[in-house]
Length: 169
Image 1 (tube, helix red, strand yellow):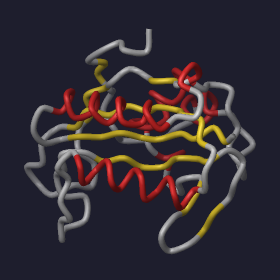
Image 2 (image 1 turned 30 degrees about the horizontal axis):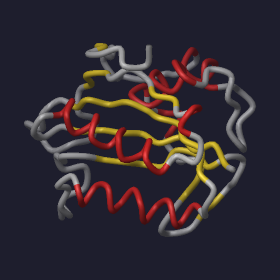
Image 3 (image 1 turned 180 degrees about the vertical axis):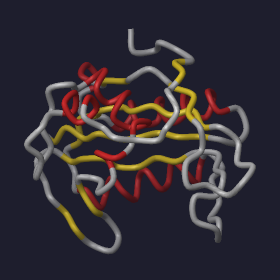
Image 4 (image 1 turned 60 degrees about the horizontal axis):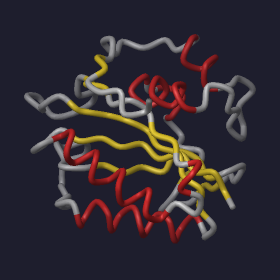
């Protein structure tokens, strides 16, 4: 079984409900529900998004998964579609839900369809901060610092994140 980190984001509709629905579906596919980990949800400013984009709610979960990374990618894309995400021609356009694989155990994958660990994970406070809540000591393949260290040493123009719930407790 692989431990898999998944980032969740929403900036359209009922953002919190969208994240909760995605969490429910991810818990259902987790091989080991007892070790399903979920971070708090944070309100974050849109980064690299079209002007006027609404703020995001972001969180991270970790699941156990016994399949293949590409199988899980199909499942997460299915969750996005089920929850109302549509393909947008503009990169980083507002979305109902975003479900992104962050890491898949110690696997390193670099294909057009999937790159793991996520290549920009270490540059994004909106991913590192919630991930540090649930896996501060995790060292990703190709890294020398753990998640807490990456967050502590992050140089970013991102505004501070605002916690909007505490579902991890």
